[in-house]
Image (cartoon, rainbow, N blue to C red; front, side, top):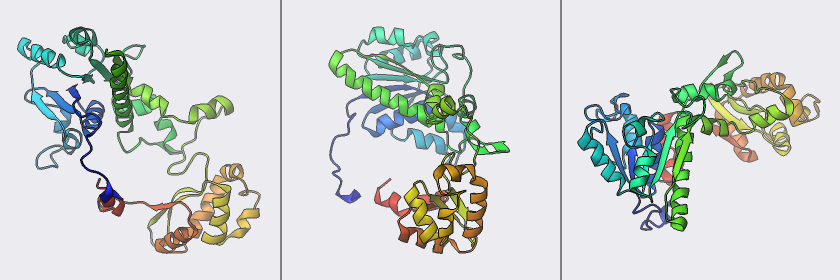
Length: 341
């Protein structure tokens, strides 16, 4: 249980110092992860305006909710690195830290005199991580990037939304993916440094991260020649899967992913054992090919009863299920409280 966890164990990155030359989401989320693991994060911001995410809103006592989310465990300093004194101050900091993370456009840090070659020459044990839109080389190196744009360029939007209209993922999923790869890369480089005594340069790309997260879609295309269809809140290969509206207008989330689950679902939940011998639905592949007919049928069945009755049946059957909660409900979720999130 959460209350039984030891609280005084030193965090894994205690003693590690990180110099963060970062803006927006991807870079700051990566260093936030490192900070949560015990690293000391020294964030450099532009005098006057600071990190651009500061201006997104003023929801948290006048501060940006995004800035508070990403930077609560850091020490922030306003330094004008366009001036000689400011630039030299940051260079001296880089000599005394274990990690530098920058997420400027490729070439910007080097032009300012804060590139990997310059700083690693001053500090051979330095781990220097660049996190950019398309990486430090390639034909798209200098193309500007935001989460939405990478979602489109990397095929994420093509797999998301409804047949008549695409949609982006609601969260900044590409910022989060690339920041996770950056954090993992930095931790691995720290581990490698314990063996070699020297640092290394890490090149993380939002685009690379997004393509890596396409998962099984490329394999399906290579072997079947099929582009993934947009299926809204459903699964591309498993059905029934997704939220269904109950009779009282509340969504119930289903995931009937195996033959055994389909049997239980038909017999015990919707009480339609006849579907088990219906040739349109008796295998996973058949259900996928006849998705429209099956979806229409289940949608009508779920409208016959209120959501609590469906939840009770799903709970009793021990099938995977869930509710579709809003942010306020999530923040009060008993699991959030139990896990001390």
